[in-house]
Amino acid sequence: MPRGDKSAYTDKQKRQVRHIEDGYEARGVPPDEAARRAWATENKLSGGGKKKIEKTEKTEKTAKSRAGKSGNA
Image: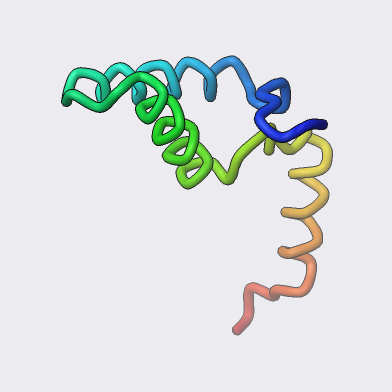
């Protein structure tokens, strides 16, 4: 994937970037700089790209983390 390719982001992340970008432009930041800052902000908030864990993977991880714990501590 080439640098700057936004296909790895979810639709929600792209919507959030547009909203963040509008906020920067409302404060007088030039459009190209607003876009750069908006993507940087989204990357900071979400870690960048798609990070969704499938439900089965999530439940397996939870079960493994609970397996070593006992209720009689």
